[in-house]
Image 1 (cartoon, rainbow, N blue to C red):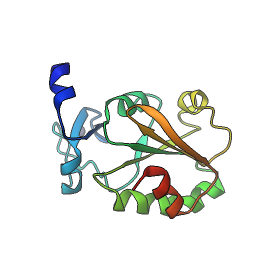
Image 2 (cartoon, protein in one colour):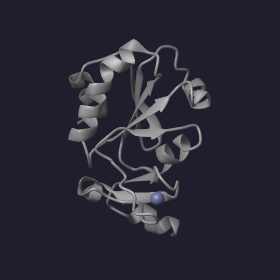
Image 3 (cartoon, rainbow, N blue to C red):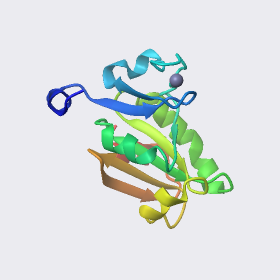
Image 4 (cartoon, rainbow, N blue to C red):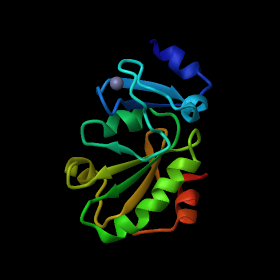
Length: 151
Ligand SMILES: [Zn+2]
């Protein structure tokens, strides 16, 4: 695909690896609510749940998604992260097509966590056009997540 084609495209989209086969898929925002499946293996992409990002996938998702992306930096042992998890789930379920909700395990993906100087978890960062546009540290309620994500 040519660069010109991408920049003239009106529709916003997300670019994500398939959770099953790992191949990259581009999903337009208008189709995110239709239960999109991987174009290669047919596995459901589950965009109504937070999408797990890793050190290996983070940069490309942020760089190539023209929809705003919210990232929940968390760890499995973190109590406040568990407290906030239902709100993140709810945000993902209710903002399909307007915001891509993702999460990153800071233990499993320490490079990305280090690069964004995550000092305490949970930390929530919203990226717009590939750049950080807002951040919130600590467990916050759904309303604050919505405000951060602009939805
Ligand atoms: Zn696949």
